Length: 192
Image (cartoon, rainbow, N blue to C red; front, side, top):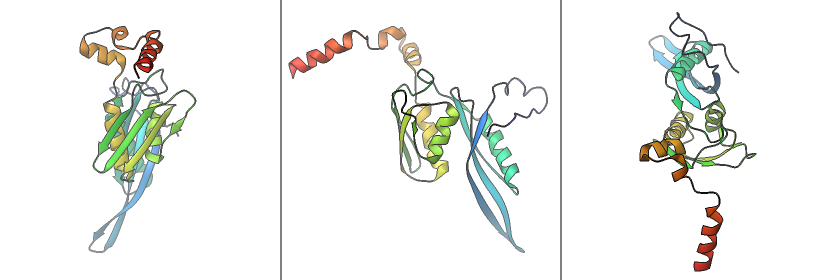
């Protein structure tokens, strides 16, 4: 359910140019006990992304559900991270993420695999624009911690270009040569 970005003044225009999609992951009714009884409110967890490599999550609380979702969406847009994708469809390498008791493992996958992941993680991958990924969450089932662990792992994702830049080399120098790989594997077989 993509929503129209709403502008507050002229300064937000340039930030909101990419069309963001958002996904409601969890909604929770929370209560506060006061002198006269209980006051009920709603807590919403929302994941937002442009489906081209940017994703963020936010949480909002309010007396009404739509207001909680709006607050969560605003927060998610403010704290987005950029993740490099390979061919715009999968991860460059396998990563692990952790947050609290949340542990997630994300593995790159060949084309046509699809998104193999549980609820909250699936929302993150869909909003990120990943098409092929195999992921497993162990530890907590708490959606907040699962999403935080997923984003923690995605932050450590780096593309060959970033690695080459960090090491002061060219991308071609750090990637394995296509024609050399079969020979190398043959040599290993002979030695064994």
